[in-house]
Figure (tube, rainbow, N blue to C red):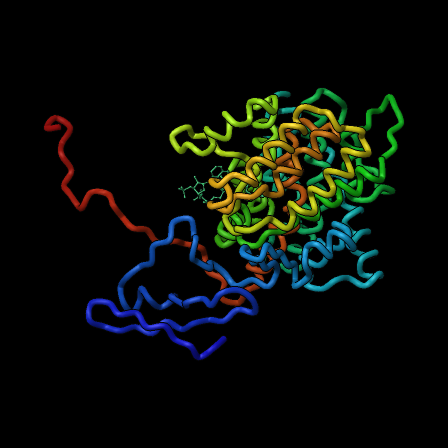
Amino acid sequence: MTDKVAKLSLNGSTYDLPVLSPTLGPDVLDIRKLYGEADVFTFDPGFTSTAACESAITFIDGDKGELLHRGYPIQQLAEKSTYLEVCYLLLYGELPTPAQLADFSARVTNHTMVHEQMHYFFRGFRRDAHPMATMVGVVGAMAAFYHDSTDINDPWQREVAAIRMIAKLPTIAAMAFKYSVGQPFVYPKNSLDYAGNFLHMCFSVPAEDYVVNPVLAKAMDRIMMLHADHEQNASTSTVRLAGSSGANPFACIAAGIACLWGPAHGGANQAALEQLRQIGSVDKIPEFIKMAKDKTSGVRLMGFGHRVYKNFDPRATVMKQSADEVLDLLGVHNNPTLQVAKELERIALEDDYFISKKLYPNVDFYSGIILDAMGFPTAMFTPIFAIARTVGWISQWKEMIAEKNQKIGRPRQLYVGPAKRDYVDLRHR
Ligand code: ACO
């Protein structure tokens, strides 16, 4: 905090707006008393200049392409840490000691199974349901299965709900996948690590032994780590807004999953790969780039651009390296989708339109390529993002609930509808 004050002159009066100084990032004008004192609202659709909360979890510097979790750069975490260790860091604020990590991993591992009755819930969906639709339903339904962790005023119940969701989301996503391909559900195997267990639940079948490939498990762990949290993005803000009314944590995370599904957010990884397939061959790229530059075409280059990163997405750099490792391991070199991806990336990075608008490949551009090579259908890309982001949503939700002066989120509006008018009787209209 500082003693700095900004002055607002309006209608002949001057108002003081305290200037808050964060640990990192630009100063923030405190407008909380503005309406009460000056009788005006502020207007900021899309929240491009509005800080809606205080948070100590994640920091992004979009110009420098920097992403820090609790102060630690994502590149260092990606190189040296694991997904579960990053989960601990996000949830509790510090890197765990070996004993703390072992205890945390054991707690998560002990909750990987879902209530047996949930299997019937899955069977109510059509086989061709999008797994994100299934996940929104099943995660929301967790509130109906785990009554003993829905009291948001009890810190212990909040903790149990957090562990349950981190542990069960991979099981739920894998079940949604198995259901969609008509294969039996595969129970979790607690001798495997978090990412390896997810691959096992997705790709093993009762008729054959399945051995998890450690390179693929590491790549999956990294995909999850790179998606773990991203401060106040659309789905996280949705979780916070839903939670601000006192809704139970399972309902809040289901709301986050619903928001993540959109193609401008988590759905971009599916949309990006489908777009690469739609382009089909390298010779079609110029025509496609032309459309992406033409606003009237309604076409955007999926997997490019970011609201906050304006130089590069640091997660994309790590993800690109992972993509190379996985494709090498699987011997995928001449696949047409990959050829289109590489050429599209090259052309877009040299094109004035994309350079001037600071549009760079984001994390979703590369994650889809890896997941495709691993054998996941495109419909599973966003559910995998949802598994990974669950810890971020929960950490942000817990942070908000623990705040002393937490209020229900309730934005104002710039009303542009009709002024007050009298009802006209039906026969006179
Ligand atoms: N292809 C072509 N043009 C684009 C693209 C794109 N992918 N993204 C932005 N632009 C253009 C816009 O037309 C606009 O042009 P203008 O200034 O001439 O009007 C300019 O760049 C700014 O775009 P906005 O939509 O205002 O930027 P915003 O910050 O609101 O959007 C977003 C960011 C949603 C990510 C956007 O870049 C996009 O739609 N990208 C494709 C979808 C995508 O990959 N989403 C994943 C985001 S990352 C994540 O969720 C993990």
